[in-house]
Amino acid sequence: MADKMKWFAIRFFFQFRTHGKGRGRDAHFIPGISLVEDRLTVVRARTRALAEKKGHAAAQRYAKDTSWRNAYGQRVKAKLLPFIDSYGLDEQPKDGSEIFSSTEVVSSRESPKRIVRRKIGAVSGASTANMFMASFISDRLTKGFF
Image 1 (spheres, one colour):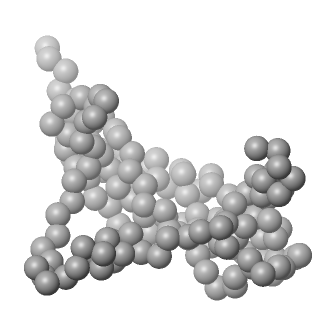
Image 2 (cartoon, rainbow, N blue to C red):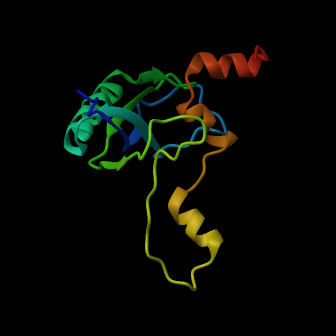
């Protein structure tokens, strides 16, 4: 009997928020911000519905198990946002395989720069790194251990 399992890319969004007042605040401490992760994983399943169910279970575990302390001693926690998208792969994943595709109808007058900015949002930089970076990584970077 032939293997009926198919490959699917499953897409979820997670929001990372800080909890607690924070200590040792400096110029890089920015209250009231959060970080959003756009995460794609690859799963095998017989149907799209089963792939989404499997992906959702993994996403829930990831959100539950992903937590750390930032450079300010705040707890950073992940929350799974209410969104799921899936894409059936045409082939077994290998080097160069397309694992996700999404389309959107836009005005032909919208500039490429505006489209990209809207699609990816504000990109975080060095000034926000300490808010979401694990404290041990921040400490090593500050001390030059990497």
